[in-house]
Amino acid sequence: MTGKFITFEGGEGSGKSTQMSLLSAAFAASGLPVVSTREPGGTPGAEQIRSLLVSGSADTWDPVAETLLFYAARLDHVSRLIKPAIAEGKTVICDRFADSTLVYQGVGKGLSPEYIRSLHRLTLGNFAPDLTIILDIAPEEGLARAGARRGSETRFEEMDISFHRQVREGFRAFAKGEPARCAVLDATQDKEALHAQIASLVKNRLGLAL
Ligand code: TMP
Image (cartoon, rainbow, N blue to C red):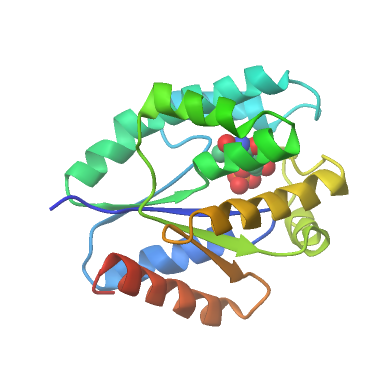
């Protein structure tokens, strides 16, 4: 049997990493094979592209060039890591995926959703997550949380607050358009309560025995 593909999305500091670790531990405790990965990144080539994208000043890249770099990284990641793992029956849990491009480069930087969707079709066909969990938080709160662990990967965090507000609204709007795939959850609640909500979504929507 093939595995499932679950993605986590949300603004900066929404707690994706914490929830990914809790979910991956729940899979392991239930004896279900799982692989955790992230975007941009996940393979050696895509990690190299990541370092080009997440550091430097906010205006380092032309928005279209930036989008092509995200898709170059994504294609390498999907073809070399995600699809092979799914084919072996593993569930892949990924920190960000194509919805981030629609929201950050689309809504945030003004590229049309049609452009991004055609690029997706050209590179990946109709490959899409089985479930997308969107962790929703006010950008002021999320950026304060993210700031507390600030490293060198600050390029997107440094965009102004209106960019981050658009990102939040973008995720909510795309989720409304695809309710069977996407679930928006309140990221400000207690982390164990949030994990319980995520685990029940995985059980109910994907039929996995967590
Ligand atoms: P991270 O902080 O969640 O690791 O993600 C790195 C940054 O890259 C984050 O600020 C969002 C941004 N990003 C995009 O702008 N477009 C994309 O397609 C992806 C995957 C991430």
